Amino acid sequence: PVVLVIDARGMTRGIAPLILGFQAFDPQIRIAGVILNQLGGARHEAKLRAVIAHYTGVPVLGAVQHDERMAIAERHLGLVPSNEAQAARAIVAEIAARIAAQVDLDALLGVARSAQGQTTFSEAGGEKKTWSVPGFRGSALRLGIARDAAFGFYYPGDLEALREAGAELVPFDALRDRRLPDVDALFIGGGFPETQMEALAANAGLRAAVRSAIEAGMPAYAECGGLMYLARSIQWNGRRAEMAGVLPADIVMHARPVGRGYVHLRETGRGPWPARPAGAPALIRAHEFHYSSVENLAPGLEFAYDVERGHGIDGRHDGIVYKNLLASYAHLRDVAGHHWAARFAEFARRCTTTETHA
Image 1 (tube, rainbow, N blue to C red):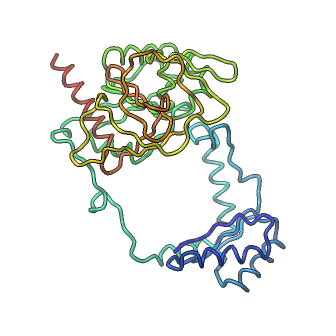
Image 2 (cartoon, rainbow, N blue to C red):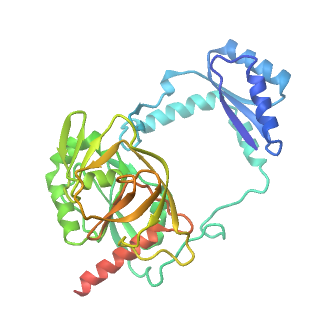
Image 3 (spheres, rainbow, N blue to C red):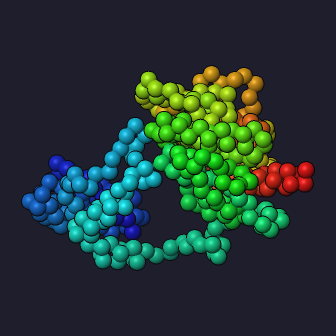
């Protein structure tokens, strides 16, 4: 069953052909109800309910009035993430209360329960497939992960996959922690380092610690915001701030997106991680969303990926390889056929084992 949520601003009788069009477009899909959104008031709601009842017979499960108090702040890259919004929990609770008062939640749950032929994805079920690394689950790999106002874009599924691959996730704050925790490897994910660049620059102790660790061979993976942090500097709105200085490049922010959308990557074979699992597709499907570009890139660097669709670093390559670091604009997903989390964890474990034996 499908529930349509319709932005009904300025609509009256026109809502009927819209709903009828959805019903006729694919008769195999059951339109189980509609939720009217952005309504102008009680009179507007009454008119729409009458039209829908007369022409379509589709149940109206809720009617939500336009309310500025339900707005979520946005900026140049979209929504302000919850790791930056101090009042995020209060805002979500306020929105939840207003939705609950205007949507028939019992009816909505009833629609959900009516679904037939559901597929359950679970750890124990056969639907979720994981790539296990032989002999990798012996002891935990301590993986430092940046979690703060600058770096908060992580997929929960990827973090679960890292734990399944034997990694203990150890958070650190790139804005406040003066040194790295005791870890074997680093993961610096996406985020908005440009909005925190003065604070990141002021934390010279951690920048130096990150640089020293990677220069000494610590395995590291950086995505988008993490790549920006590992460069020499970030320039934005006429301001410039020093970053970790691991990568021989500078980051420049632009008013329009440089890379946005789905990307197709093909591995070059020069990446540091183990070869992909046997039978895995050669093409990696990921996504990018960045308003920044990499400038003054030193010549002779190696790349883990050729870009067949998308922009990446320079329109042709992504995934800068430097010592045991892989830094890219692409956001990977730990999905069937690729399983980057296990590959990175295995690589980090190999490096750690080699250092211990040495």
